[in-house]
Amino acid sequence: MQTRPLRKRRGGKPPAPVTSGTKAAPKELRPAGLGIRLRHARMVRGITLKELAIEADCSESMLSKIENDKAAPSFGTLHRIATALGTNISELYAAANGNGDRVVSRAGERPVLMTDNLRTGKGLELERLIPYSREHLLQGNIHHIAPGGGSEAIVHAGEEIGYVLDGEIELVIDGQRFRAGKGDSFHFRSELPHAYRNIGSKMARVLWISTPPTF
Image 1 (tube, helix red, strand yellow):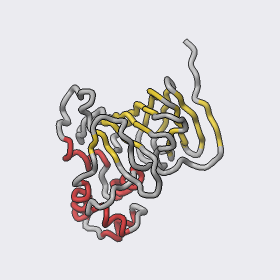
Image 2 (cartoon, rainbow, N blue to C red):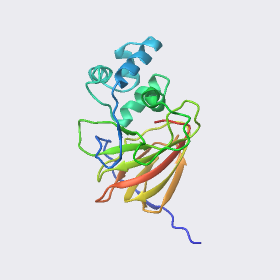
Image 3 (cartoon, rainbow, N blue to C red):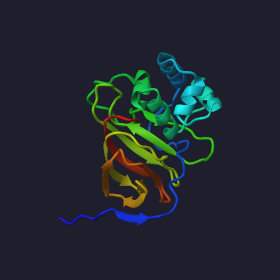
């Protein structure tokens, strides 16, 4: 059996920041109540809004809006906030979903994590394949990515593997660019700065597995 390597391209600018999602995935899990959990985690740590804003590289005013559920953070911003608070995004959303021990997640019933970024208008949604639970070692999602949409570059511990179900994406791994189309797979260490975007003209869908859970 022949294999087709990912197409590699160097240079250029990194992908645009992630933005609010489209309606491709079946069921939304909006970040209602997320602000309360963030505020509680911050108070448990005993740090001020200003201190958290500095650690998470986020403005104090934006962080205040997020805590009061008046603004939804991008994935990159939420990841930095969670890391600064000593937790992860899965843990922050766990209370909203429950059923972490169920075996079968029905099509059309899986929760979809959506965030928003006011600076641009592209889309990204994560359809959760593995229910939220602090006991899980794996994290699995289907990434629904609108044309031009994608993720901000992040760094964290772990390892990731992906399989492109539809469309074409560009991965940026530690400054190197790779293209992956339908049927292609990829893997990399999460300690390397990584981001991606949909470079096609239609919705892209990517099956994405990582360990340990980050989102």
